[in-house]
Length: 438
Image (cartoon, rainbow, N blue to C red; front, side, top):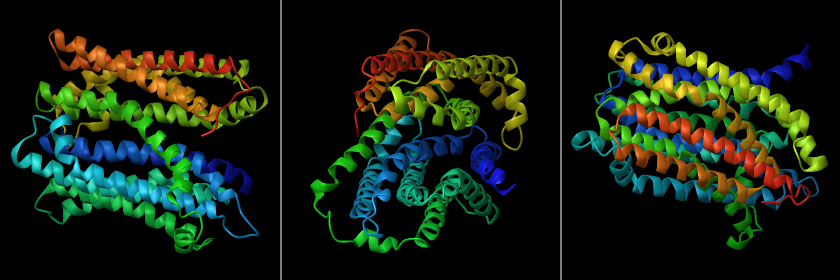
């Protein structure tokens, strides 16, 4: 019974994390609807959250080998390299993020001006501090995973989203004069929470302060391979997220409320895609890893599994599109999220939902490219997706621009991305034994 529970623990924690993450969206919708505060939250929280959420899985996989290289029962000097490199990147990214917040505000929300723009910059700075603490928790979680303590990784989203909701509601309840700042403070608090929990758990098995200050490998050049691997993943995620950032900027130009509405639609899409992708990847990933280790290819059986997942996701997307109004109403229509917000969001979601199939299969195939360690091909598919998105947005601009055409470009980009990944996997299969290393 205990073994059975341990087997189910990871997917249960990941499922609860997805529910908590979506619960955060429901709370924000109830508190702010599609008002200016909701749009400030989307822009300020968006990029730091995208980075901290999407980087964790890949970086944990990269860092684990550094913690598995033990010498005479002591933590390897490579462990110190891992901690110092991630600290350096976290600090630099945070500082750059804070200093460029005025530019981010102008680029992603050009119609937010005056006092609201000042609030956006302040909340954005708090969210970049959140990113710093979340990023610092990644090597701690990798260290725990290397010691076969996997559940903190699986529970990270649950801890972050849960603390965010609790802190946001507490700050609103005590009557914080500026509710917009409550968003930033809740985000910062959630980042500190996941770092504190990870630090407490990791420090039970290792002297973390010792690893940060351990002698050896202190020359910057010795850290370059790991730093470059991490920076590469950050750049890839930035390129992959560019489409969503473009949508945010364009929707803000169309009129007030559109940015928030399109982001609520994204929230539903990403939650469903993550649920299907994560649950199936738990079964698929070990099979793919074994097949790649043996032949360098994913194998015909795994291709059939991916095809079935794609068809199931497509059918689910069509069903969600048909029921879009009911789904949005059930999930969001309460508090300050009224019928007008439901109508606007559901019309966008009905379009977005049709891309669920390629979105899910892209998540699975992207992980396959990561397992093959084809960094160059990963960069290529990311750039292809961005180029397709820019072209489709440009075509929207030269016609009569509206939010529904902007939503349509999401489908175009995701289908193109899925096709590009399939093509790149075929290229990598042409040289199955030549698997590059980070």
